[in-house]
Length: 273
Image 1 (cartoon, rainbow, N blue to C red):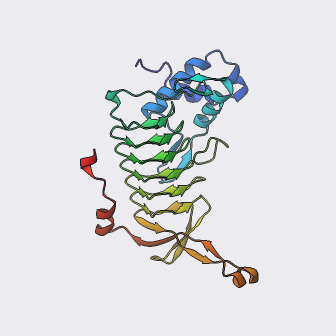
Image 2: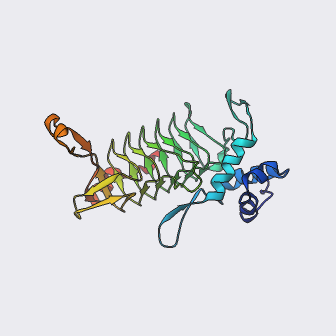
Image 3: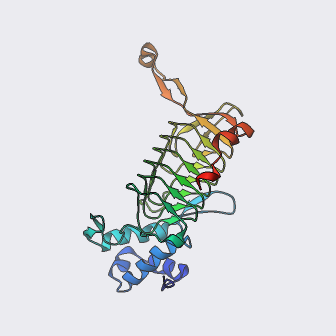
């Protein structure tokens, strides 16, 4: 593959202009081709971790993806499928070092998959997503648009990592290195899962979900702390009507922080690789 025609800095300058100006620019096709190449190589990302450890969206990058949808029409693509021509399925070669197990998995162009990533069928990785090296994406798992998944993460069967393209300033879901995401877990609306955290099967988290820390006696929103082990829980619903009916609300809880037993239970098996 030849080097991209524009550097990341040139792309940023191109797409930071008014969207209507970008749409009318004759250089859009070259810029879009460079954008996809840089996304797939990991040179540009839809979110970045700042020096203080906080994650922030990269608005110009998300704006670039939205322009791509506007500039392209629905066409017949390989598969066959029918989608916006700017974002066809991504093709891989053996040199990419990605293990794409046959059986219905799809990866869209503009998604980065690091070396050693394993995709079990059927799985889906959407545009703008970043998946770090050695991560396992199990059957029926979704990595949504612009989601940021770290290295050596385990996304278990049925895990749903939601995507976000707009508004351009909205933070995508972030799962940091070596986290374990259990079966049927749902992560949405900009939740950040810090490194080595463990999410038990069935946990549902958004950026505004209250997480109850039973170990350190606190409450958290927007972020699962490093090494935390989170499981589904419940709490009584408020109000006399709820009390009469005995209703409960979902309440994810931190029941422990990672230890040697947790490491053994969530270890990625090297033999599978």
